[in-house]
Image 1 (tube, rainbow over the protein chains, first blue to last red):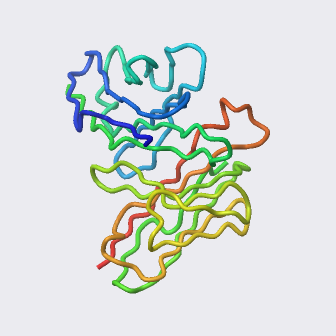
Image 2 (cartoon, each protein chain N blue to C red; image 1 turned 30 degrees about the vertical axis):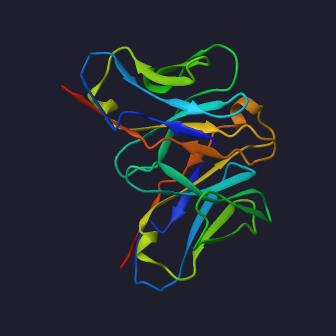
Length: 116
Length: 118
């Protein structure tokens, strides 16, 4: 069965320090992987995605993620965290089936808290 | 572009009542989706549509119905609301046929509808 796991419910980081939000996946075939961010009382905003090509993907707001096929991981990273990065982060995988409507499977989310 | 919009933003229902949530998108997207978000469970797909006039079941379809009579609109109906349907509902859309596949794979989300069923 296809699945996505975010092993940490919460990540706490001091402002200016690097941050990592972890994501692992289980899917047959070559996955399309996504990160979304959700600020309080808002919808999800797209951050970045891996479709194919370079394993290091750069996205919005200085975030990047590295696709690691052997470890089936797609961890989200940022070199220097900001207080404004505090939000709920979701990893998602696209089920790689033809004409399946682009369905996404989401992880349970990781709450990122950046303290001054 | 307004992107993806949802109405209403918030609603309180009594058990057994019915209601319809409306999602509209102005990005010429072929695919539309309804998700529900519950604490600690991420987003779960309720129903989706790959084009006007077509719908399909997602992961948690029971108790919901959908319709896609127009390409830009996707309606989610609750015929007889239950407390277990208390949740935040998100609509999303994706895939403009004129875009490359790399762009087309991104789903764009609406602001959500908070539903409380008493």
